[in-house]
Image (cartoon, rainbow, N blue to C red; front, side, top):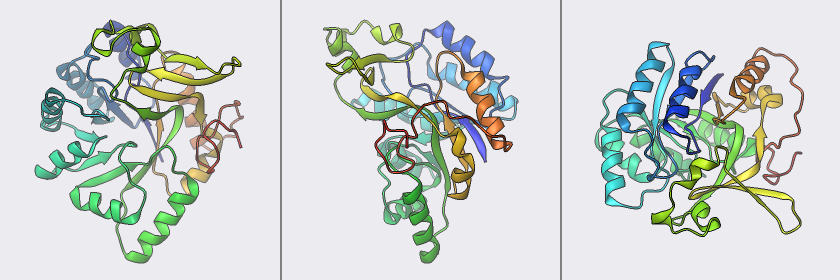
Length: 288
């Protein structure tokens, strides 16, 4: 079982991002996802910057994947996606069906991101025919779904891709053409002032009773609670998960990686009070 560093979900200043990844070069990673997957207006780093970072990680023996946007809204974003797909160096994480189509047209193998709607064997079969090599399962799909899918696929004689599960981080729940952060700050989306950069781990949203509820992250809404599956590594392995995805956070990432490396080594991992997401088919904010 391998550890991956998911694509950055938050908008960080350019120098902070470069410094953060410079440190990440020394972390015990197997796979790193690079690139903007949330909002096309976040341009602190350009494609050339992500490619340069990719080269640095590849030189360390880390598998590099370039992540695409989860929501394509304009022709300019589609043009940027084409440049991403045609990079000729690294595989693509297709987070939108248009990315799947572009990879298929070029006969390129790709990683399916968690925002692709894959709920059944026929969807998986279609994507396998298109070039899917690894699938990051959607956040609402858990242990029972994966076990059932593997059983049905085996009975049908379908060769399965690798499976990746989100094992650490706030879970992305929804995307919108509107910008939630801009709206919360009384701004228009096209005149947002890039205020996301002021919230390196998202903008907290509480209920009227003052209970922490969600995180607003530009056009994305996330869970408030961090998903932590480190104490359940053996269960993930038994269910057929090949890769554990850890989403980047502004601070404390080396400690997170050490926690998961210890779990993979068989150490007993204490429960931190975070949630399990939907791994056990419960509510996303409930620790079961």
